[in-house]
Image 1 (cartoon, one colour):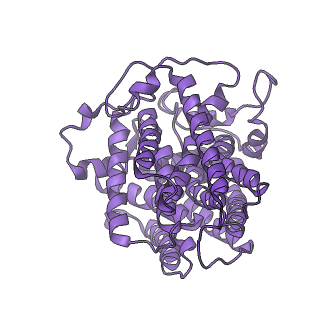
Image 2 (image 1 turned 90 degrees about the vertical axis):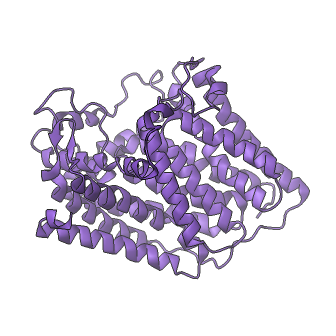
Image 3 (image 1 turned 180 degrees about the horizontal axis):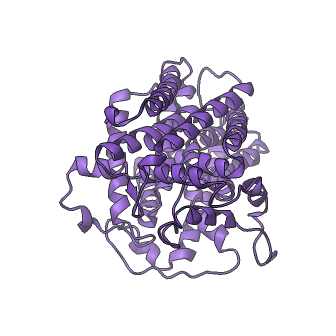
Length: 438
């Protein structure tokens, strides 16, 4: 596999891997337990998954064809873009000064305060379930048996606010770390905890979008350790991650979006087969390299369109029928037009591929630096009030959100999802600050 790389590719792969591992190991060895579960570790792990392990496995298994096109010639470009993104991101991240926190502990709260936190938790959970109900109708009940394919999905709402309803499901993700927190603090019973978590993860599995499972799993595991101020246990967490990757592989080939899983498609698979399927996301890396090569040739650079459209995305279209759309995604389709006009439909790319579409390599450096500043600032906000339960949830959700930012290069969607996936924890914190929980 290593011999299949040219000298330049070897340099890129080695440097990217070294930077990522140095960051991860440094945080693992840090006396500050928060650093282990911080945004940088999540981002670097995601980079290794999408940008190193997946592509190398694709080369080793001779699976570099995507949509009838061999993407192997574009790997070098994709690795160069990834390296530039990492460097610019880390520079931007380092600029923001962050408060130092040595321990995580629960603030002293009365029974009334605990009751208010639980009320906020149930409010988020209930609103998330209500959104699922609007999207699936009676299918919400059969989705709890997510391991079976069902056909009961029947949307009860499809109006002008449908985008908000779809994203509203993500409020369940905000509830997950708080459920674990209250359980670890002995403020929530085991049966109730397991029931709430099962419902959330069953809904996410039935829906078929794996990012919800990644973010919820990471935030739950983070709070499991941080809420009682414990250091990570490497071996069980490593085994858990391996099993999770296998589960992601199962979902990859069995999902029927919103209708559960068809496990008959993997009934003859071994565990290792499912693990390998879990790395099929390398297709996103391959597509990124292709789009970078075609930008400026098959289509014009898009400039600040990602930022502009991120700002206007929350405005419902029925209020502004002519608002700008994410039409620049058609450039991905144009990148595949040499084979078939529709061959690129629905193909995703990594975030730095979108940045390259903006201004070339300059776009990667600019937006990489910007994302570093942004995530560092959000990280600092979480650290400043980390002893508040809701801000601990905000901190780990923000860290997990690095997965979404890197894995899907569509800034308007990333922005919209943030306000349903991370921001609600901050909103709940502000609400409870008014009730003197400090």
